[in-house]
Amino acid sequence: VLRHVLNNVRDMAYSLNLQTGTYDYLSPSLKEMTGFERDEFVALGAERIALRFHPEDREQYEAHFNQITVQTGNLIPVIEYRWKNKNGEFRWYSDNRTLIRDKNGTPIAITGSVRDITDRKRAEESLRQNEERFRTICENAPVLINSFDCEGHCLLWNRQCQETFGWTQDELNAHENPLSLFYPDPATCEKVVQSIADEPDGRFREWHPQTRDGRVLTT
Image 1 (tube, rainbow, N blue to C red):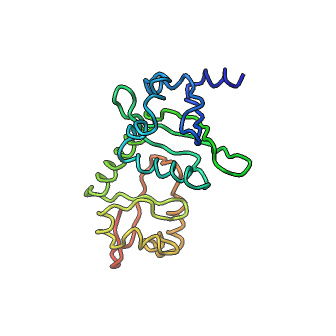
Image 2 (image 1 turned 90 degrees about the vertical axis):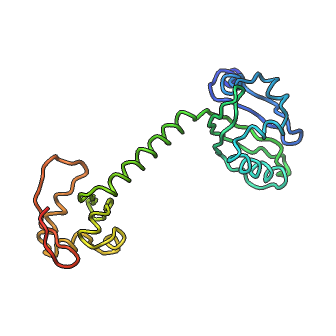
Image 3 (image 1 turned 90 degrees about the horizontal axis):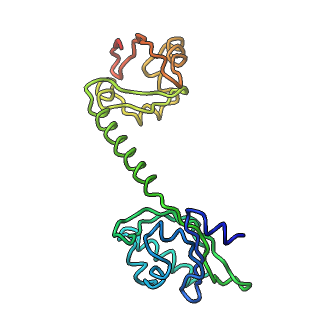
């Protein structure tokens, strides 16, 4: 039953014999995931399999593997890496692994499952690039752009804010109550805090914050 399940899941299941350096089991998902038939993959051998790792990931993977085979150390349970499939494309994979030991505690095998996470990685990179673009635009915008949470901590403080008010974001957050720097009057400061919500309500409010040098602005 277990083998039937393993043969029909999209993740690739495997069992690597650490004593022989060969795979005792590779599930049929290997072909869909890498383009290689089982016999083709096995024929690559450990050295050529290792050479198909992305250069930026190869050293880390080999270090993890050598730690297992040379020592009886612990196995990092999940690693992510890029590996070149049969058509020459580097794909991202997540390898979820378990170390199997004999009765003496010596590592004898690694069993695990590999999932193609290329789409997730591309989405994460796209999000990172979008966030970086937003951060660049925000930082260099000639208007005041800032954000505070419900406890008054500064989450966003662009260059124009720093130049106008005179404080850096770190200086604000080092203060016990950052908003009190702008609104020394406790009642006014409390009103500002009460106006902060998790979700914007679309309303504009007029405030009169104070700068570091004592000027009072209208925002």
